[in-house]
Length: 296
Image 1 (cartoon, helix red, strand yellow):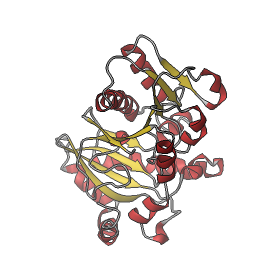
Image 2 (cartoon, one colour):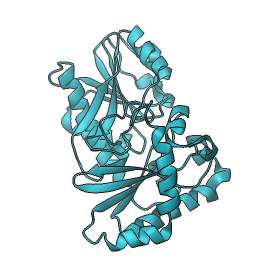
Image 3 (cartoon, helix red, strand yellow):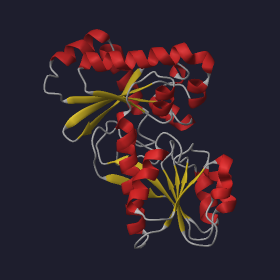
Image 4 (cartoon, helix red, strand yellow):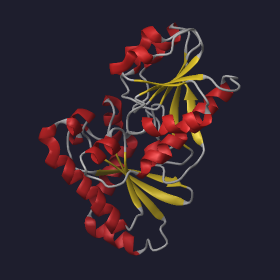
């Protein structure tokens, strides 16, 4: 799937949703899933206008109805991706509490009908749903943390960095951040700093080169431009990938920027906008090689 070619798949998926996005069909498929070839159900949402245009016709935008949008083969199993076409602010709006609860119930129902082992959610949803007690487990959390930890080592290798390096984690007290911080502290004896907006003073002093991991929101990086020093490396895991404006600003500061694409895996249609050649971390059902992309 490319940004230019993906719209041709919209009609195909409109037809597929009309034909197979029904409980009776999922129940029927589930009857043939005794060996677990359908491993997981993954719910995504569009992170920006371009994703909306690529995944749905305009009249679908803003709907809380779950739509089938992709098939993700991973490790000999299949993850089926669905999308709800609302933005993060709609999930956070307490007036939409019942709508969000219905989405979660529907995803769980599809998982049961397909007899899949698990369901996972994109972006802010895992932490939000756990906080609101709408899910009891979050299988995507530990896998995502492991992928990010591996991504740090890949960045160091690509940049020719040997040994330990000062690491700053934006959002290190969050849902994924706590796990990543724990992983890195077990690897490094020192130099892992957790920084959030309310404790900016904990940013490490000095001109020592740093890797700044963004596990907060996608619009968090600009808040720390003034703290970046020449040679620093930004590693983004937040969804969606950094915009062209953010990438340009990081480059102008003589810093580097990498993005965590996810894990190795096929997809139909293929992903775009920083997620090419892989599957999102939160869709993975088992550990697999991490993929990073250099943006500057």
